[in-house]
Each structure stands twice: as structure tokens, then as C-alpha cells.
Image 1 (cartoon, rainbow, N blue to C red):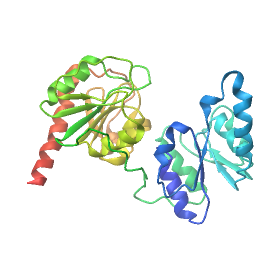
Image 2: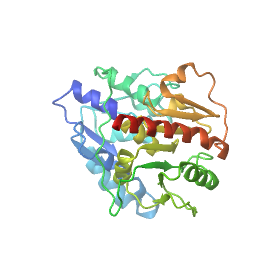
Image 3: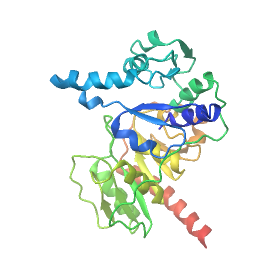
Image 4: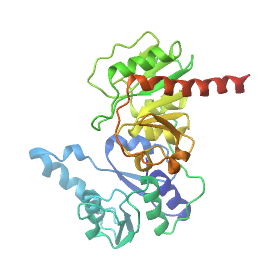
Length: 313
């Protein structure tokens, strides 16, 4: 997600170039219909485990060596991604100055970046070093998504994504239930992957573990508002719409928050728009999101809904 604007800028600067993106298979649908990418080269990471690794890895390596690009751009900045650049047979490998795990040893050229800035801005620095001009309005080309069967987008609904892999990022079940009750009678659609069992009130639609990535994108586009913890789906939502609250318990929203100046973040009891973060003071301290914080977010959601109704009238 964070690399999309950088690749878009590179495409604008090199309209005749052939651009190949090396990507894990589970994320390929994010590039469906992307006008900036000519070819997707799959890195089936899950297959490179156990005794069958040589049988899977060697054919992949052979296909990767056949790419032979003029330049490999390593946005990820890890040893694995730098080795992919090397394996591709690229004449040059470019990377970021904050590359980790020894990845910088493989770079021919390095773009100077500040590791404390947002990932989108760091990746744009690499695109800029490569000769791209960064436009004032960034492009996040995303597919339109796939409509869910037997799901009606009317009446309007709020999308709630309360789960994340990071420790202590997910919302507790009691908080999820509080959101449903506080937003009633508005529908609340709950999405994400979880092993939990939810006891959602009647106004909630539980779609956990039931949506593909493309269906999730469609739901985000159809939702009146999205409430999400710090996660990949949150960044997708930020690229689609400013009608978003991103909940940060311990992560720094300046570095990993939504890259949309009109989106909202919650941190330590404060609700701020992204364009207010620069003057917000210290935001690194941790605090869990509690049931007592729900009304503050719900009030913001209702404000957007009231404005939407006024505009419609």
C-alpha cells in the first residue's frame, strides 16, 4: 500500500518502461488493474519451508533470474528483498539508507531517508532519487473490489475492523459490542480475521473470516465510515476515503498512521485529524482503547452522517 504512490510516480516519469513487481501471492489482488505495473512476479514464501524447499525454490530462482531488469528498486529494505534484487540479475540495485539486515551491502545506489518519517514519504524519496517528480496529489491505484453475495449496501452501514496481528492492537470483545450498541440502529459490519467468538447485538453483521481482500475493498468503498485498528485494512481505507478513524494503542501515527490528511486518528484519548499531528506533541506513549472511549468516536461518526444527510437534502 505504501509503495503504490512511489511506483505511480516512477511510471509517470518512465511511461515506456516495463515495470515488474515482486510480491507475495496473498497481496496480488491489490494490483489488479493497476496501470503502473506491467507484470507481477510471485514470491511464494509459504512454499519455501521444510524438506520440499529445494523443489519449490530452485524453479522460482530460475524464473527470477530470467527477469534481468536494468534496475531493481528495493522498497522493503530487508535482506530478503535485497537478495531478490540480486537474484533478478539487475544491472543496478537501488535502496533506502535505512535498509536493515545488511541489505545495504547489495545496493549500488542509496536514497537518503529519515527513518522516523512515514513509510509513504520514505518510499517517495527512492522514487525521487530514481528521477521521478513527486506530484502534489498522490495516486493510490486500487481495484474497485468484489461485491459480496447476498449483502445489500443499503441501509447505510459503518465498517468496523477491530483485529490486528500486532500485540495489544486488537479491540476487546466488550469494546466491539459497545460500538454496536452506541451506533444502533445504524448497521455495523464487523470484518477481519480472528479466532474469537463474537456476541454481536442485532444491529451488527458479523463477517469475520468471511471476506476476501477484494470484498473488503468493496465494503470499505460502500461504507459510510470505517473504524479500524492500526492494520493493513486501515491503510487501504485511508487510500480510498477520509471517512476513517485509525485507533493507535502503542504505534506512532506519524510513522504508521493513515496517509490521508483528512482522516482521523485516535491516540491516548485524543481524536485528531492527520493534518493536525505535526502540532499534537508527544504521541508515543501507550494506552489501550477502552469502552469509555467509544462515545467520542461514535460522536465523530454521527457528525459525518449528519453532514451527509444535510448534503443530500
